Image (cartoon, rainbow, N blue to C red):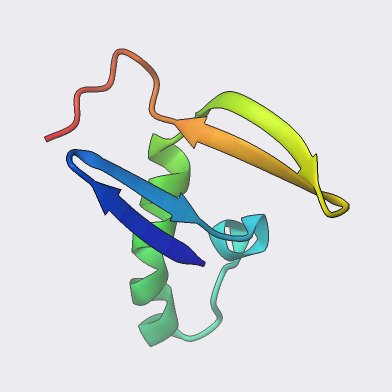
Amino acid sequence: MAFSRVQDRLVVVCAQTLLNHIPTEFEDYQSAVLWKALRELCSREVGRADVGGQTVRVMMPPPDVRLP
């Protein structure tokens, strides 16, 4: 996973399995809440490509979502 912040944009690169993981321990579940929120917020696919045998998807919030 990687994070990059440029001006007012945040770019997150991570595996889909990280976004879909459901931890079994409560303490781990609390730390996964950010990933779950990110998955829910970024629901609009704006691009897709195959890179090295893996499908890469570029996701963004829907246009009607206003971020702080």
